[in-house]
Length: 73
Image 1 (tube, rainbow, N blue to C red):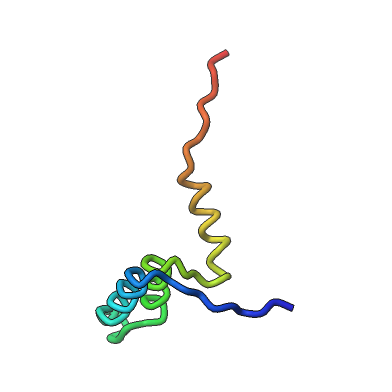
Image 2 (cartoon, one colour):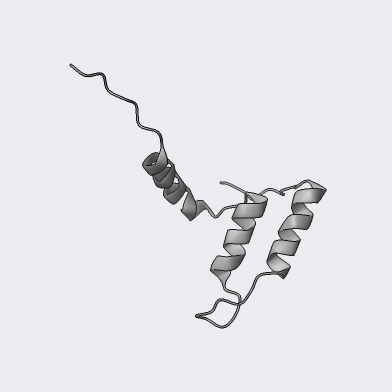
């Protein structure tokens, strides 16, 4: 059984994260701040990502990875 644990951020990162959430502008399509915007602030500023995004990040990293050069025959 896995239990959640507390996460401690540096005071600076915590402050930047709070500001990012407080300063989120309403989504032009939804007309309000969305859960996706809060998720992005948590991830981009606090490096806190939901478990389900892990696979997406691996795929993105692989797609943007530098490919090894092959030698000409």
